[in-house]
Length: 518
Image 1 (cartoon, rainbow, N blue to C red):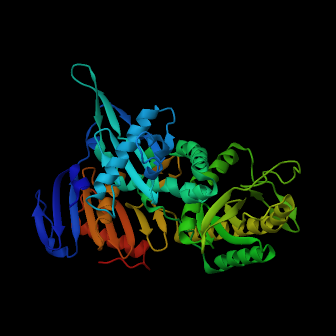
Image 2 (image 1 turned 180 degrees about the horizontal axis):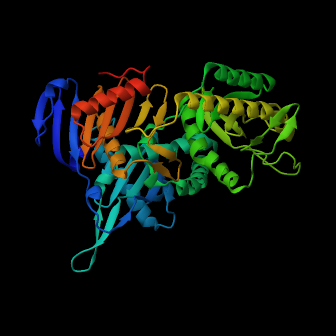
Image 3 (image 1 turned 180 degrees about the vertical axis):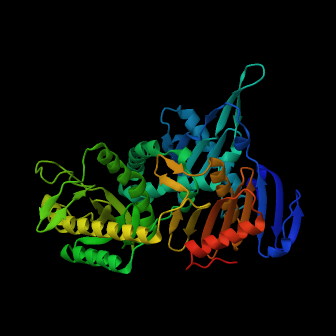
């Protein structure tokens, strides 16, 4: 059953395990298709129309956190609400909205006690529910995309596009909100133990007041579902140099508990647990690094301050902590993060240091006071070596590009994700930050990718789906052995067999050491 795909389809040709269902004529060689394939011809309303209309992207209407145990009696309903955005909403409306969500969750529990409601669809809005900790509920209400146009009588009409909102994408965004809160504040339960409800309310207000302003729902897509990590490919010798550098710094500064090394916003090495690194990577690449990149491009805070340390150039600087080590009067502090430990969570100082395109994160126990002298010692040790390593990595990268020859515009674009090591790779996204998602394909094709992913999430077994769009594009999704591959092909006159062969060639050239089920 593929509800989302069929909602915008006019014709479909489905092959499931050898049994056929024809919804339109399709002259394909069925005997050559031996595995589970779903093929659909898509017609998108947005692709087909050229009428001038006013389009509105999905926007955040409400966001709140509540605990039903805090106001069990009549007249105490307001005690349940721990945070509500926007705060200007009248009190009775807040209580009414929270009560409705609580009722929906309780009602759906009667059908499946272990899996309460995750989303509620209405014509104008979509509500998402998430219980990150026992009895703590987070709710995000998103207004559906809509189109304003004038009818024949000259009156404005509004058309809502419910099908444009993909549950898995925005459900993942809601989970990211909690993960980011937990990274900088720890769990809700921790705040309750430290200072009760009032402390938790204060922390929620302080964090989400700023964080929700950075939430750009129109930029969310399949990569938000995966929440993966882009790894930088390296040769063995350069990787060993980085490993040696990390070991040397940790040996010289025994206070350092964990280290992570990135180049060009891609991860090379990490000592953190996988899930912790995933959240930290999201913060670094969508918030911290872009924030410091813009002043550099404008000519301010330029890292190009060559200083001689012995015979080595020194381009390093702190992205967190002291902005200028030469100013002894300047005050500074490092942000604190929470990561998984054997007995729960541990609080750490986050030191992010950058030289050219290389960045290294050092994490030190929050119980340690970090002085200016410590920062100066770390700067003198790390700066010259990180500058040299960044130069070596850049040189190796350029050598590899020369060997591979000039890049040609491929006939395909793809997204790859590995659930086991969280590795992701996308040739569709030219730039992906919190505020912008620049993709090289039409938004309707990104919507098809999201629909295929929804279908994959409903089944545990391996599966393959092929979709034909009316714009001559073919979209292929493969799920195999904890890996997912999504391919967009621009081949106007290709048939199913040719598309299948093209995807096989892609797997052989781009993923030659990765097994995909045929």
